[in-house]
Length: 184
Image 1 (cartoon, helix red, strand yellow):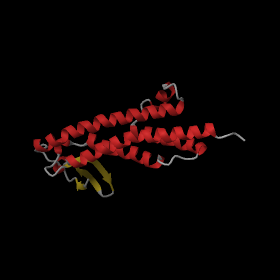
Image 2: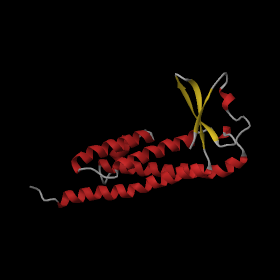
Image 3: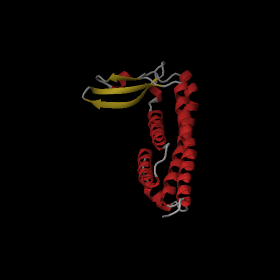
Image 4: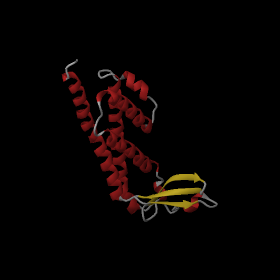
């Protein structure tokens, strides 16, 4: 997805498409946006379950207390820290770095989609996503969305959800190897 920064002059609305998004563009993208939201919520619930399992395998209440009122990025960070600590004892998980990276990227892309100002989408798909204030001044960040880029985001979210199966297999293998290793 391409991005562009547009400086804000006197009025923030100067950078926006005030005619409103075209129906043609919204008809192509709105269902994909809905699927992104739906599948991301499923991904987040799976992350919640995985965190709870790291506390006590057969009781979720402690994990639920810990994740209560945390946002998605905080949950990913907690999950990563818990796994890294556990991996110091178990010897490492091959897919962990990629898994955490995809969880993080899925959250970042979901936020772009959910917080985008779709009503201000331009005909070329550039949509206001973020206000940036830095030493270059005040700017609007526009991201160019298309049905294809939204499908790619959806595919990443689904792929990341499916990585939980690989994570669970590797995690179980680690515990099985501990059980079968004779003590000295």
